[in-house]
Every structure is written in C-alpha cells, then in structure tokens.
Amino acid sequence: MSRKPVVLITGAGGEIGHGLIQKLQLMGRPMITLDLVPIAGDLAGLVRQHYTGSILDKQILDRILTEYEIDLIFHLAAVLSTRGEFAPIIAHQVNVEGTLNMLEFAQHQGESHGRSVTFLYPSSIAVYGFANLQEKNRAGKVCEDLYNHPITMYGCNKLYGEQLGNYYCNYYKQLAALESSMRVDFRGLRFPGLISAQTLPSGGTSDYAPEMIHAAAMGKSYDCFVRDNSKIPFMAMPDAIDSLLQLASVPRKDLSRVVYNVGAFAPSVEQMKKLIFEEFPLAQIGTKIDEKRQRIIDSWPEDVDDSAARNDWGHAPRYDLNSAFRDYLFPKIKEQYHGTK
Ligand code: SER
Image (cartoon, rainbow, N blue to C red):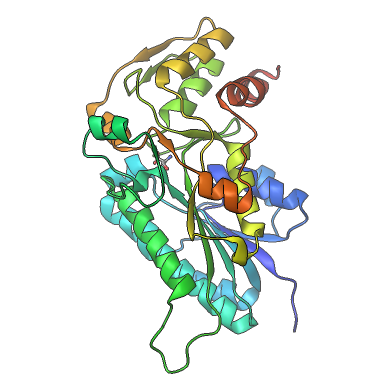
C-alpha cells in the first residue's frame, strides 16, 4: 500500500518543536511527533499523531516504523548543557544512544521505502571548547573544524552525534558484502543560543538571555548568572526554524559539508541589558555570577563563522540584535504576558 510520507519530529514539545510544528503545518506537511510528554493543547490539532514516549524505547520506534512512511526527520530531543552536567549518564543516553536509535530508524525507513530519509540534527556551539578566555578572545569567529574540544557532556554528545550522522550518511556498513544503496541524508546545524518569544528554555547555559527578557516583561526581578562582558552568539527562534527548513530543502549535491555553523548576532550581556532597559525602564536585572556556568560560557565561542551556510544554501537570518529584540521579542512577549504590543 502506498502511503503519503510524513515528517517525524522528536522532542516536539521543546522550544524548537513548538515553532517548527506551526510552520510545517502552514506548509501543508503532515507530521507525527514523539516526546516524553503529551503534546501541548495548541499543537495537538496540528499533528496527525503524537506518540508519548522516549527515543530510547525501541518498541515505540518499531511501531512508528510499521505505521508510517517517513521522508524527513527533525531529531530535536536532547538534554541540554546545564542539565547534562547534573545527570551526565542520562544526557549520554538521550543524546548519544537516542541519536543512534534515530539514525538506525532512519536507515531502516530508507531501506524499506527505497529512498533515503533526510535527517535534520540541531547541534550546538557547545561542541567548541576553549582552554581559557584568552584563547576565546583570540579566536574570534570560529569555523566548523577548529576548537572542537567541548567541556560539557552535552557538547561531547553533540560532537559525536555529528560524527555518527556523517558515518550513516557516508560510510554506513562500508565493508558489507552488499553495500547499502540507501543511506541517511544527514544534515547538522550548529545553533547558537536560541531566544523565543513564545517559550522559555530549560536546562541550557545560554538561558540567561531569554530568562532576562521574559523576566523583565513579566515585571520579575532576575539575576544574570554570567558577567556583563560575556559574549556568545544568539539567534531569534523564527530564524532558527527557517534555517532548519531551508537546510532540509537544499539538494544534497549543493552541500559541501555535513554540519554547518549558523549565526545571527553575538551580543555581550551588557548590550542585551541596555536594550531591555530601553524597553522596560523599571526592569530589575542584577548580576549574581555562577562561576561554574560562567566557565561553560567562557568555553564557547564569541561568534561563529557561518560563511559555508551562507554560500552553500543561502543562510541569511532576518533578525540582527536590534530587530530581534525590538521587532520580534519585545512585541510578542508583551502580547503574551499583557495582551498589548
Ligand atoms: N542552548 C544550549 C545550551 O545552553 C546550547 O546549544 O545548552
């Protein structure tokens, strides 16, 4: 029986999933979703079927394999960098074993339907790691192949996930008597910190940026846990979603890499605070440095060189620092909390 192929999203209940589901629905793409928790009420009507369960549960994956034909996977499920330092073994299970399960799943899907499955993998600036701040400052914008020495479990897991993706894409069972003609079409994106107006992240280390903005809009006080001069790249959520969809749609032959940096803007904490105080003059944002989380931020690059993504598939984020805050985050967040723009 021939079935219309669907998109599968793992970790669909997270921050990226939220916006991605809305966008795919507008594009008329049927989707199924998998997450540890039931799908949020506002998204439930947009997906064909939601599976509540884990990417570590092979039975669920087998069930999905038999019930649907899937041509595109967004593998979003992950344990982020701060949470991963409290539960490194769980992070490894979810981020590495879970990713391996999903790559096997994609390979089997491809083999049973006679065409390769496109596999989108959000990676992270956490795959980079500097020995000290001097090295970070000297490095400036980093390109993909340098400084791949992560200091977090999450960063190690993401870097290895990229390598596994490259293996499934280019070398899977290379010594088998009958080499598989069908390989997973793996595409990785190294995201900077993401900031959404709709949701708050949980368990990340770049969370200080969205937390400051949302707290100011809610009239709550907030102590930023890193120094004012800390600098890492960020991106507004709509651009992150667009870049995933854009990379998913490019013909493989136009891709010179398996994994791409994507950047947008790279503000210091001080620059972000200035914009927040301009919009919310009564905001109460202080600083209470958490040396351990600061160490993680200091190990991440101050910006990324994303020229490969710009050249190969036209990565061009809509929002820079000012427009992300003034045209996207502030109006949307105010609307959400106060019903006004
Ligand atoms: N936002 C992620 C984190 O902080 C980095 O990719 O863990």
